Amino acid sequence: MRIILILLFLLITSALNAKITWETKAKTQEAGLFSSKLLYSFVGTNTGSEPIIINAVRSSCSCLVASVSETTVEPNASFLVAAEFDPNEVGGLQSQRIFLEIEEQERPEVLKLTADLPELISTSPMRLFWKSSSNPKSQNVKLILSKEVKVELRDVYAMDENFFTSLNRVSENTFLLEVTPRDTEVQRPAAVMVRFMAEGRILKITIPCVIAERNPFEIDFRPEPKGREVSFEQLKAEITEQNAARVQGLPEAQKPTFPRPLNSEK
Image (cartoon, rainbow, N blue to C red; front, side):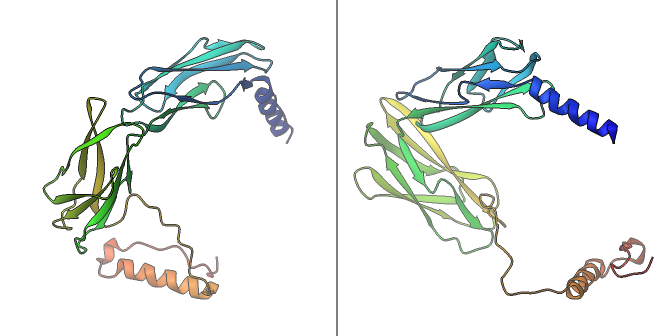
């Protein structure tokens, strides 16, 4: 017991001795269209009583390069994290993260930087899903072009022969894209390409189109149906029945040995 208390004391003391206090851990920067190499800086201070050792600096995207001014930070000393961010050309709100791995610290320090650029084109929804072997019905995607920047829609086409598209103008800046699969038994990666022009540059975005047994873009958190009360004996019977169904038809040598029943005697 004494050893456990000593170890606990050492862990708490270590945590208190090594501490980084940040001026801020998140920064947002407004930028113009096609801005690149946006510069961000974060200042941290070692407010503990022991040196802090930074083992590694990682970023969440290859579009972000980050570095630190010091890898060993003495108590009461400050250090700088500098970052250069090259955002995506299609604009909109874009965020990335910097991870600082600190020696003897279980979790990294996380810094967030955001670039706020004019959004050139938005899609709703951003991706499409069809259940395999279902009726190949058409699905619609609304394309909204920026009103702040002149955007010209050039062409839209399916990047897989199993899909075909049609495009209809709803208003001056809004289009309705119809996407239809030919065969929902064909399961392979596919997408629709949208090409447009802004300020003399040809840009593009893709809309993923997935045919699968389950929707990879959704997580099902449906609760158990209400009103169903299951007793311990009923639950045990259901588990026994499921186990028997799993091994039905297997050769005797391949049948697994299930654990002793829950109510069995030792």
